[in-house]
Amino acid sequence: MATVEDCEAALIRLGALLGSVDADSKRKHILDRSVACKVRDLGTTFRGELRGGELHDVRTGDADGAQIRLQVSSDDLVALTEGRLSFPVAWATGRLRIDASISDMLKLRSLI
Image (cartoon, rainbow, N blue to C red; front, side, top):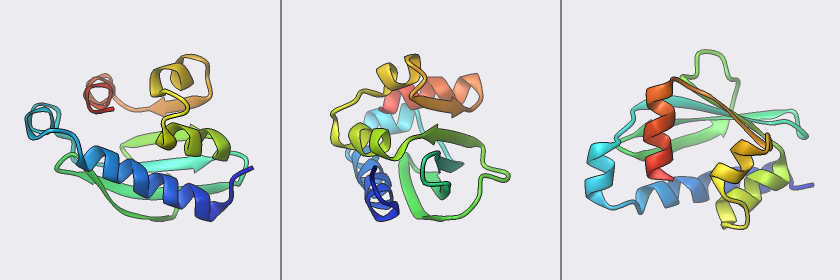
């Protein structure tokens, strides 16, 4: 099981991955949303802000009011951000749960 620190580092890596998306894709699929990621096995929730196609201000918090909510295990979160697990496979198999509007889901899919 990954630690809280491992998960925070994974979310920071995710922010860097989103930041590396080409400018045209960012413009087409830009999202400015609050995000919460509940790490089920650790009982910890992280919050952040998607702004300009990048993830900012990652910190522990709660999911209240977040526009995009993720739920994942600590090991799967680390695997997702290290490229050992793909987002579509994780979502399709229930290892990653995403609560967001349909339009936000489509935009996220285009960025990841």
